[in-house]
Image (cartoon, rainbow, N blue to C red):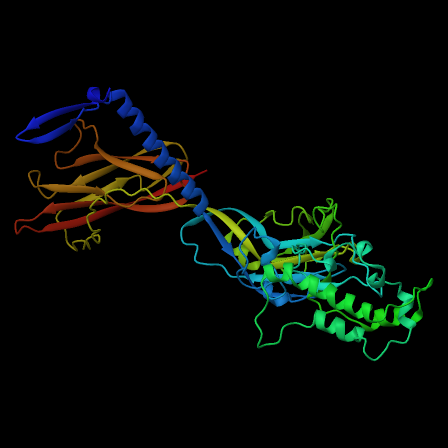
Length: 481
């Protein structure tokens, strides 16, 4: 079979291998060319469709969300990024209640010849809803942890197991056990909490996501377990009042939120929320009259919202109001890194044609009438009436200085909507040979405006010296409705 594809020749002690020529039918070439053309066309169309968008960002934002100032300008987090990219350093935070953000002064770039098509509002945002699964502690509090903690510990230590599986001597105790006098060697609870929630000092690098999710939770549980193991308290049937006072005294930083310990049978700590209204959106062109936009739920938080604006000027005037509509009891947190007004546009199509050369316009010559001409003219009658859409005739008589001399007759400027021409008038035996009769044909179009207008008949003769002698006769035209 190999020999059917190759021909082997021996020439002067060397082997020459000739590959068999492959013949491609012409129909295959046409098919290949068609596929290439379709691919290139599709790429260009897709590129044009994806590129015909402009984004405009707000230059001023006010409100009572935490960190509202970071919403101004272009978002730091890419559109559609996951929750791990959002934090209090690059996003405004909303945790429920009646809180709002006002943004405006969207900076409009140079639009050039772009044709405005449609507008929509895009939010760079994400959300987190806390699970109902909690970690039991000695005072009944959830273990505080940074909002970036979203995974369970990966190492298999006794501290990370379900509290019900711990030995009896380190099981969490009811809240009432706090009333028992603690020995001097037992770590103070406030110090333990302070170690847990105190952020890194300026000289220490921040922990990465992997470090936070794998080591930090076990370290917190270990501190609490050791504190309990030093002197196990006696359970009490009723919670004490001192526990309630301690709840009010301990305040967590804004960037710290409680997190739940996962149940062994549950795959994740957080659950997907049901569809509900999370944000109410409105817009205004003057800051006084506000109109509602479609409400946003947690599930469609990152979907574009259509905006009813139609011009580039309205982009610079529009103001956006985002009002939170979640209850604090829902334990939901929304991060907003930024927003943009996204404009879809079309490029203006220009028909480029070969420019045609145009003669420069010449100023009309200045004609000076001869004070003592040897030729003359007369129009009868002097005044003529005409209705819109009608025709009329005016007779002009020329009196040349000589029958053989060369002459020129021109009709002067007529009013808008009036057209005219000259033609020889019929003669008879009674017409003097020294007189040349002419007819002025006039027509009034529909665009002719009623009124009284004057025009002239310009009559010139050539002189022996090569010049011309001019004279004129005037007539009056009255246009009626």
